[in-house]
Image (tube, rainbow, N blue to C red; front, side, top):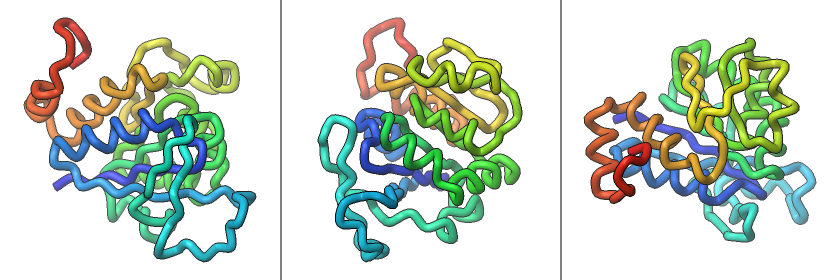
Length: 202
C-alpha cells in the first residue's frame, strides 16, 4: 500500500489539506498528517511531541493532525509521497523549516514523490531545487518565476515533483497524485463516485 505524509501548520489552507488527504485515502493510500510548529506559536512549550495541537487553518477551521512532525520519522524510507499544502502563513512555516527543506531534496533524490500546492511551492525555492517546470498560487509567482520554468497550468509534473495552484486546483492535484502512486485506473475509480461535472479534470 502506498503511503503519504501530508504536512500541516497554523495557517495551512484547509481545502488544499483536506481534499488531498481525503482523495488519497479513497485510493487506498495510507496517509499521515504531521503538524509543523511555528517557533513563535503562542504557548508553544515544545510539549506536543506525542499529542500535537489543533492546527488553525487559514480560514480559522481547526484540524487535529495525526502526529507531530519529526524529521527522523518522515524519511523517504517511511513514505512514498511528501505533500506540502499552501496557505500563506502555513506555507511560510513549512517552507522555511530547514529539516523539511532537507527532506524535500532527500525524497526527490530517493525517487519518491513530492507534491506542493499554492504557496507551498515556495518549498521548492527554499529547498534549492534545480530550475524545472513548476506552478504556484499567483501571489508567490514573482518569487518563483526566475528560479523555475514557471507555468500557469493547473497541475505541473516535473519528474517526481508535482505542483499546483490553489484551492480550485486541489482536486486535479490530488487525482494526479493518485494516478502517479496507484495508476490511471485507480484515478478513474476514485473520481467516478465524486461526481465531477462532465468535461472537468476528473
